[in-house]
Length: 258
Image (cartoon, rainbow, N blue to C red; front, top):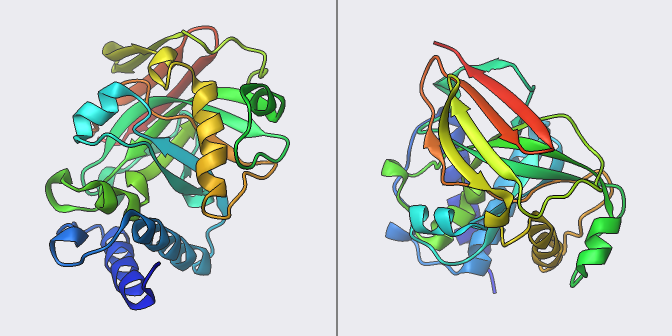
């Protein structure tokens, strides 16, 4: 059971932190709330953003690799919402002024052509996908020192802040065990495999259908789903040229203003 005053108060704290690019203490340090409350807070923050003119475009999965779980000190898979304001043009340059302590990680993205909801099979998930693409996700916890509990990070939209998508490819592309390299200025920064994402990114999509349905939000046609980081995240810094290359799938680039 959620508690509206608590939800509204916490949503205002996180929304203000993001809007003013100012870190805030963990919510759990001064408020007691459950994981269900945390997702309600996340949804309330989204409603504030939608009221300002943003549009919901997708969903991101989090902690789908062992590397991410270890890096963040958690053991449960989580998810967050994506809006059009978070979508960054591939190959473009961005400023870090709008982020608090940004990091970046390599991902695989799905574009849905059919609705997915609840306990779906791998075959059903595959049939619902229109295209797949390499992606980069910028994560940026709004909490001080990038420290948080599971409930804190869920409330904070699972730390999602920005997304870069590469070129869309056929969903028939083999995604089971593809090499993934994220480079900084042409030098490998993180090396991994798509198998690090729950053994296969397709399993992450199956989990996404189940988790989103648990909140009454089925994945509709046109939805973008980020499968989760294939490696641990790395800190972004001014002047970087970031590239993700996924074997057989393609690449995506992002530049950071110096």
